[in-house]
Length: 355
Ligand SMILES: [Mn+2]
Image (tube, helix red, strand yellow):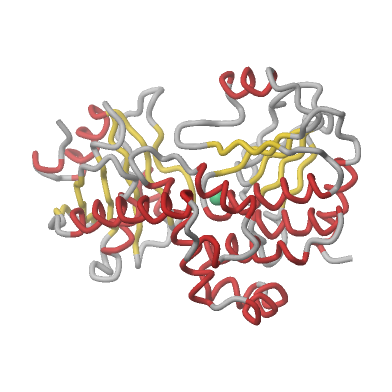
């Protein structure tokens, strides 16, 4: 049995123990999380549940929060599936069968009575959550018509080239049914709402829950398809404006100080790494959340940005998040005072600060 098939079998074993209440799927709001959520919900409904509810976990939300626990408890779910949101030890809704489907490095590991973990983080190559979801769906029944949803998540997380080289057995057959352009366009549209000012990805989920292929997302006339195109235009306009901002320099750091309600700072940082190859590029957005500066660090030359930032960290308060994520893609969310101290210590002048 392959690693993926084993993950699927473990999922089917737990899904068989779900109670009579409507199962609830929680999913991340990016292309991989949304397609995983849609895949799992469609598979559970096919497997005999009259309905499966999906809840997108958006900006600032967490399944491991009192707010989510209260919301879920009111729905008395028969089972919980948590997709692409990480792995943590704490039970989400004690007493409800719970399965965490994920591919990130676990933050902590739950006891067996708290949750079952389907994690691809130790597999080689590391799958996306949507690919794990396809394996779960396949273990429940016929799911080959849903494989394109895994394709959306693979291209979203790994890019076309990475997806094709790591998972040719999935991408090869998909490329016979769908063009690379259709998959790429669908990914770009599905990923747009999470970056808008509202951050509301429900239109993307709605489409993924019913579409029979990427064309319904890319050229569809449904109101949700229109909403995705509008979301993409909103983000593009914000990004175009931010790309005209000249970088500030201090030592090894190049800083682009933007102000937008859209989550464009990671894209801004990434877009400069091609031209500023020797620097650590930081995109910092002081208008994303009141009182905070959200920033993303990327670099073409520095392999460990977490260590780079931690070596230069300002004193942090309890509300500050600093240098979390991946070594090559990190950043933070810090209070304005923390930010201003950080950039001053780095050697930047007043134009780098946030008001
Ligand atoms: Mn994700």
